[in-house]
Image (cartoon, one colour):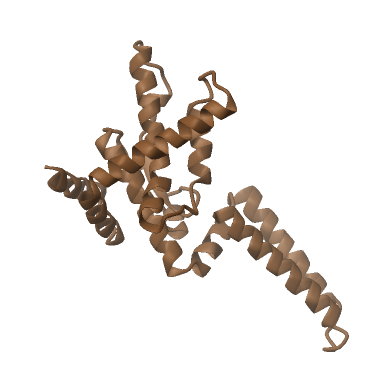
Length: 225
């Protein structure tokens, strides 16, 4: 969703600059004006990509995002949060906008921040380690599941799928098997959210109010108990 919108913004910018260059003789504008704008725009895009990790584009996307897109982010991240809590994967924080992410030294338009130290060193019990990998895979796909439950489709999740591929990179499997594992993880996440729908919706409201991680976890536990 982010990449698609970013490409649309870039395409509109290029079209606008090209149009201004073509119309500048009719409008009696100096040819240096569209050339200067092009130079500045390309310079800003380069700096944003190399130094700011596309956070400038993310901020721009956030400004022009519709209310539905902003709501989708919350439902998406609540899916991650709920499943991580139920699978006892430590949650360190969450952000729901590009600006919040920047303030927390994170990238993207927002997200739940996990403590993934368990992925860095394998347990002596490989069966337990693989179980943790599978559970975290479900957590990563739970954002897509949350969106589909509310909107019947998903517009986000590309970054989640990249992480899903990363955590499974040391497991020998074909592309088709990885895709099958992804679909199974989405199905499992959907089942978890559906079975805890009231807790999920209460969590969404708490996250809208930017309540702390501990407060959100308390709300989940109250509904589940």
